Length: 177
Image (tube, rainbow, N blue to C red; front, side, top):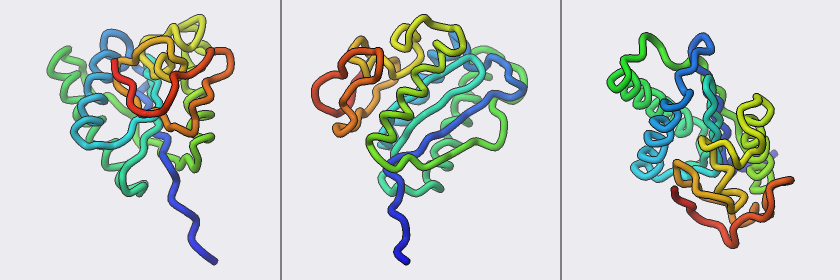
């Protein structure tokens, strides 16, 4: 039986240690800055993300599509954010809970569905009236209603917009904040 094709992207679920608000504003801006720097330096594709006070979700694609590369990227991202947060704010103790969840996202349509689900989380948590109103996500890029704090790479095949959010910008590619 042939091996299953590698996933097109991976979903990463991060949770803070003990549910502490280590990603709440203004720390969310720092996380987005670290995320943007990692994207630029390592060259992975950042398709979607949301940063909530005690958790974050990302959809990323690496050049090799290997889950081990995604886990390595995640370890580096969380370690860098922890160092920055400790240095800049004096945050006490651990930042992220182990283990970090990583799951394959097989198609562009699945990426769009995962992005829509991520973007709804601030609304479900009562933090924003609509997805595009939450500043710490890629919702604005996906709906064409703003620039995200960390640039995203919209998959061209998934450019149909999200339910209730209007039309996505024409064409795929990077959308920068």
